[in-house]
Length: 447
Image 1 (cartoon, rainbow, N blue to C red):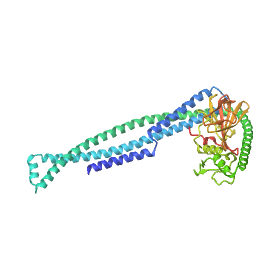
Image 2: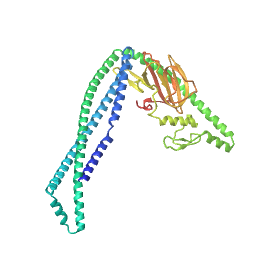
Image 3: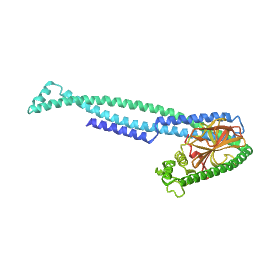
Image 4: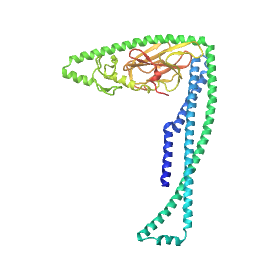
């Protein structure tokens, strides 16, 4: 009975420990997260050192400092989670230690009683008297078996005491280790909080510089707005051409199918329209997509072929998981209407601007086909079609693809050019078949 109680307590403690581990990230996960955050912060600090040498890069400096403050806050949040994890572990260990101490006291008391009883009945006369007082031979055998089991019970009790003492010592050692870890983590937290205050002061300094240089920034924004409007006209014309080509291709396929015999037409339709699954229902979509099609997808002329439909579905299925067009850098300008911190200025962005090193390789984010390569003032750009979706890679110094080329995710598109403020920068956009711009950061994977 005593052993069953001991085992039950150990099982309950293990279950409690398991529930704690399920409720929060593990130590390894938190350490990995903190290491990644610190690395990105260090990279931003290196970028900031080089940017300070160019007094025209006000907006990029602000973006870097803001990103650094956000990452520092995430790092401190991760450290706080680590502290909660340590506190939970310590609480669990303290409960376990208290249970083990009580169990050990009970085991010692019972063992002491059995020793006293054995001492009082240690003489051979008492042993023989216990056996010869049996009513019959079977009763005597039972008394011999009882004496053996009682001896084994005492030995088991002694082993249980030793085992419990070992487990107790292990938990005490683990608790002391957790206390040491907590002390170290608290020092790290305190250090990071101080650095966060320094980062915020640095941000305030950059904002003050922005206020002093508001006229220069306004000139930069006007130039960017002019480029935005020029690029939008070029993209609108390119998408219209792509729509016309898709319509012409669809009509040609329909005319070709009409000329075929009935059986051949059915075979040709099956051949040119392999099964593609809907991202919503996971049901197969077969045959030509038309305006009267009963599938869950809305009609798009860019999906009139199975290839175009498959590219669209693949692009949609990777929403939030698309790779970034550049391996490093920081988003200096986000999507939509943005207020320039510290000034009354605003800017309208149809995509995102990513600050990076001049000459950094720019890669395609998904499978598709190059629809247009264009020159815009001092830069070049590439438009890639992914079924009914389009991605734009603007502000390139070199282009490594050609119009009509089939590209894959990771295909080298070109290299980042030097922006008018002297920094390396690219613009990345996402569009649908109607020419509507979509927030790219919702499609790209988290860094």
